[in-house]
Image (cartoon, rainbow, N blue to C red; front, side, top):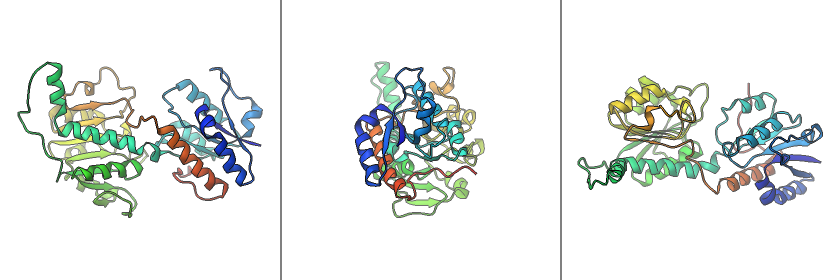
Length: 331
């Protein structure tokens, strides 16, 4: 009998369905939970039974549990596949699992809708001038706009990364009348919502057209530092910026300078070079900057969406078919 290392919520809500899927393929898979004691660990026998792992919660919600879960995965000699609740795999633990030969799948589709909604909400907040209204409210000042807000219709948004998250941002942006240019390695597909799709080598060209720049791409060796001071300088004066990807994609001091000077007119930032964002960061106080604590994807429905992705992939796993959302193996 093999075990699936998982969390209590998954075991209670989806455990029987998981076992039924496995039974249809002649397998006996049972959920395996960590001991309840915060300091408890699985013994060698239990670790040896783990073949799969699926965590549906948030790594940040309970860091102690997260460390125990990931530590158990690292020490499970038979672990063949682990499903993650997040989209990014830049954490060192995931790199170690890949080196050990563990297959990884991600849940970018599970958080795509809430992240895209957060991004578009911020776009609307900035475009409609809510920062000024909010400031006036806190001062109890009746202060209509002096400079009228810009229309979104007819403006250009460049979305770097057209995965599940970037594509959903593009879809929502187009409903607001924005012209969307997607940047991605793969050519245009039928289900893309961008008006144009260009390869990364054309990024510099499209930055010069970007009234709004959105980063929704993974952090890799190729994308680290992608938006440096030079590329920030290619944006039109008054452009706005959204980052719901990773802080390390951006030269943060250069971004702060561009925002402070007003050359970049505003930004929504959910991710940062250092997290939590230090209390002395100037980003907290810049008037046209929205700061959220790497929380753009928060949603009560995420765990069940993560579970659905895992269960769909479990069918694929048992049929020896390619897994959706699989991370390429190391090397």
